[in-house]
Image (cartoon, rainbow over all chains, first blue to last red; front, side):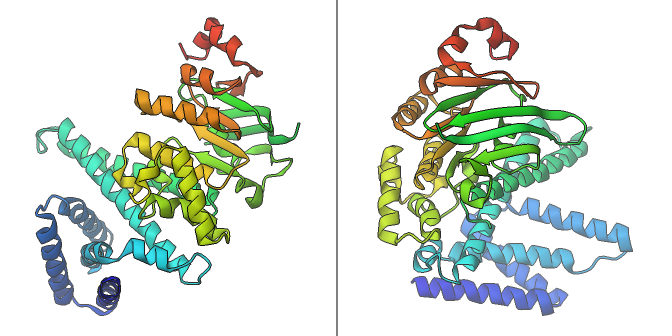
Length: 179
Length: 230
């Protein structure tokens, strides 16, 4: 089972790399729809899509402000996020860690993946925390102050993620794992 | 007595203008249990981060008698205020064995040490759980177990009782009292410090007061008031 899960996750990750490097708009859109369907089927909710959609929308908006045109970058970001979610779900983390000894040259990539996984959890936790706080503070999003509160909520989200990432890095540095 | 941690004229500022720490000098000898007290924003965590080399500061820090380097830092066990940022592996056992395996210790020995540390922290039955599945109190104890597993010569704890309930706090006190390790604890929980440390150094507006015995400090209400602890 571990082998099948590893192979499947590698397949998804390789497919993602090919898609991001060579994919056109249609291919990316189809991939995003498929990956989103899988995640929605597993989670049975769609509210988790809001932060990434917001992120892609802000990215597209900034591109439009800068160049008066929007590239496929926001779509690529969306596909990367949506495809990484099932891939990370499939990767047999515990078995992977146990099977690769720290002295092995394959250990740094495994550790790197674990770090990425942890950062993903940090992003998820903080996004949920910010959204919950925002919803509690602003019952009517489109009335006065709603959008301003959203901007500050996003600001605090990025600040907290950065702070937690710093603390995480410091902890691993002290344990001798981040050198 | 051998010096374990020595700070000489350590100063630090985040923006280059306002001094968060100014001219801090401190020495902790082997076997001592020292508390670092101060109100919110006094600079306790910043001082710990400077001592560990996580922030660029002025002044000198010596660990175990030598200038701080990667080797000496690895002899220090650290527990941050937010334990969720310290543990990240799929299970507690993996989290605890990782630094040992990384240092070249055989897996059997690493697992035995990790089991002993988990037992010491009262988490023996939870070795296969991920830190994300634990309560905050359990996570805090898991972070302490992760610090203890490498048999540190100095244990540094930043606000160890923050967000702990009564029982978790009591268990933590018992655990810390049972350890022979040199301990440096930053906290504003005076009751906790009274039960775990022998002396305290007080930090106020980035300046360090001279160290005093805990039993003297606990009765000095005026000083506690001055430090915003009462």
